[in-house]
Image (cartoon, rainbow, N blue to C red; front, side):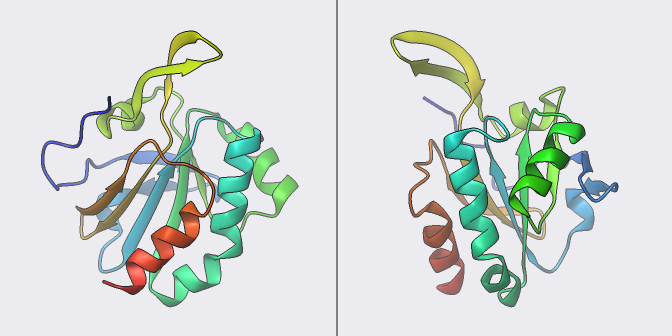
Amino acid sequence: MLKKLKSNKAPNFKLQSTSKKIVELKKLKNKYVLIYFYPKDDTPGCTIETNDFNALLSKFKKLDCLVLGISKDDIKSHEKFRQKYKIKFDLLADEKKDTIKDYKVWGKKKFMGREFMGLIRSTFLIKNNKVIKEWRSVKVKDHAKEVLDYIKNQ
């Protein structure tokens, strides 16, 4: 079971992005920042989730919402994934898993009867460095639309 964050203050991060810039959360003010953590580039669930956020990107932008994907894959992997699916937003590389652990999305997973440590698919909606909403252990189907609907109703 994943622990929620201790407070609604979003842990800051500085991560390399596919736009060749370092993205630092605390510098992203006065807009919604949607961060979704996903296990691995170019795997079935992660591809569906990323493509869904990508398909709805213009609607997120109209709501002044920046979308960022984070996994422990390196920038080279992210760039291949981004080009293959024409992803129009930044993917951030957290190879050391510092941000992943700060957001408490690293934990025990079960797959085909075996237990292992891994990234647990989760999404965070942040504004002015405050977590407004957390989605934990996300199911991919319709998740991007659910998040968009939540922001529309803010």
